[in-house]
Length: 154
Figure 1 (cartoon, helix red, strand yellow):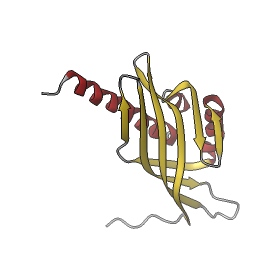
Figure 2 (cartoon, rainbow, N blue to C red):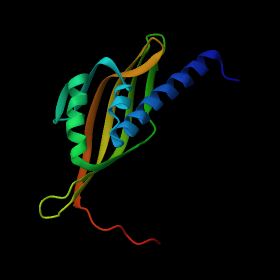
Figure 3 (cartoon, rainbow, N blue to C red):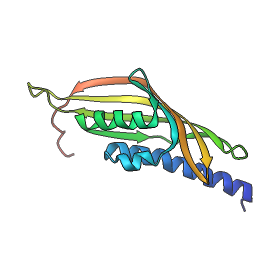
């Protein structure tokens, strides 16, 4: 039977994992209200060499950028969570394969980008809620190719 401490650890890890999955869902569905719930108001976001700053400016950047794409899909692996319950903080690394489909250009050519990304997050528990206070998005690899027809059903 798990101890109370073990249950608290499992619950915290579940809440943190849920925030990570909520982020993916919100980005892929362009649900910026839901996306906001993943972060504490004073959060800092770092998207590689593309953008870095506070939450409000980061959300505005995403709201301008993401709708320019035809679609995205974030496929997250299980997060590696280093938890300090007493301090109410956690560090988390999550690996992801992300897909972004660009809208066709004037010639009809459509690019598809697939990339491997590592999200490095710092979480804090405030008023009982685990949320991200700092996120670093580090692209590890990337591949662009021309988008084509879907393969036939097997």
